[in-house]
Image (cartoon, rainbow, N blue to C red; front, side):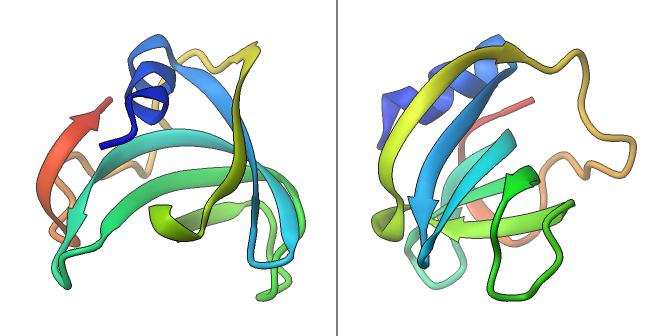
Length: 97
């Protein structure tokens, strides 16, 4: 388990990291184990690049592919309106908003 991700979720602070060839800045919402057994971060991406082209959107990140992760001093005030707590994609939740 990555305690840095849980700290960012608990403090509602942005995370920045390198993933799949792009730097990303995200609002982390849920972190845990996905149905296939891998660690997964569900977050709303607000800046950076993406292979899909859409930047401002919900993303699921495989934690083992995240590189150079940092908690930023920037905070977000509340969960996104369309946030789903206890997302069915996450079978075991480590931490969530």
